[in-house]
Image (cartoon, rainbow, N blue to C red):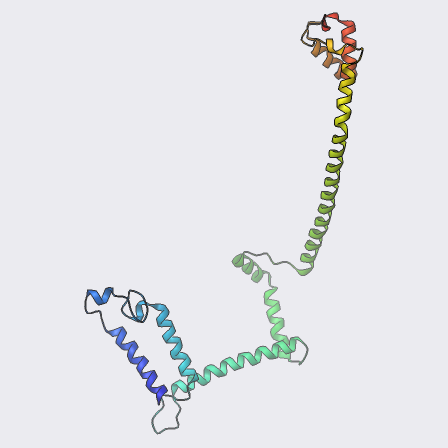
Length: 247
């Protein structure tokens, strides 16, 4: 009796709230107590309306009484019939799914399940179906063998890249070590050149040599043409052209 009274109260509340217009500007602008919004009824608050409808459906499905049943009859009405159909449909779908899954695991054998799976696989493997799926989803479907081949190539490339990076790091480390060793040698070399008897401190690169160019240009010509070192080129030019040597 209490459930039936509650259901009727909810229906009366819905009808009253939907039918009653706001009486004045204050009631129209005041926030709704039920919805918490600016509307005066549940129609302006879809969340509240959805909650009430869902509660009503759950109440009907879980209730043992049928208000639409004829009084004095067998107690069955349209709502009870719809509820039985709904529950039966859900139970049937769950049962069929379990049977197909068990057939897939070879626990049982159902020829209809095999036919269903083969039809589904044939439809999914159809080129037109795959093209439509790829177009709608923006994905590319490839065979498993091709995917494994691509994945294998990616893994091999990653391994090669890791080896190359390791080699590069080793070469960079060796270069830094060689550079560190070269610093003291260069300082010693420059010191020896400054204290040598070659007269390199008297080199006058801006002077003109006999051909009309500068001594530095003549030195570069010796280096590029004959492969001389800079020291050898300077010494040879100072011997040939006294102008390239400071007084």
